[in-house]
Length: 125
Image 1 (spheres, rainbow, N blue to C red):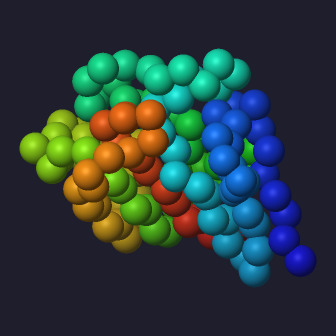
Image 2 (cartoon, rainbow, N blue to C red; image 1 turned 90 degrees about the vertical axis):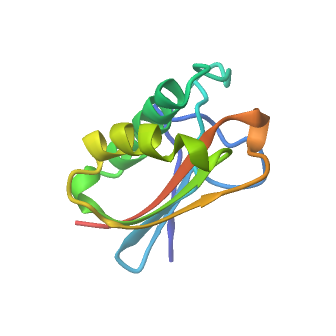
């Protein structure tokens, strides 16, 4: 059996998916982009601003499950431009201080033409 996460502290799903699913001791969160919870509007125009919003959205999902960034074991990060890698890392590193395993790839386009997306897997307590 699994538990579906639905929190107002992260953007509502913009498609047929859940914000996160908890199953077998892990939380699998859908990718978070720079959308403001409640409005669904894109936040920021720079990679730093958008990465910050992504991390805050991840925090909202973690909080809803009684978890913190230290419980994250794996992230997957998507960038619209690999030239933003260093600036993205500066923001990302201020949140994911436990240094979870990570993949980071450049993609052609992200939803709503945002600059980055972050998805996480966390160990449940």
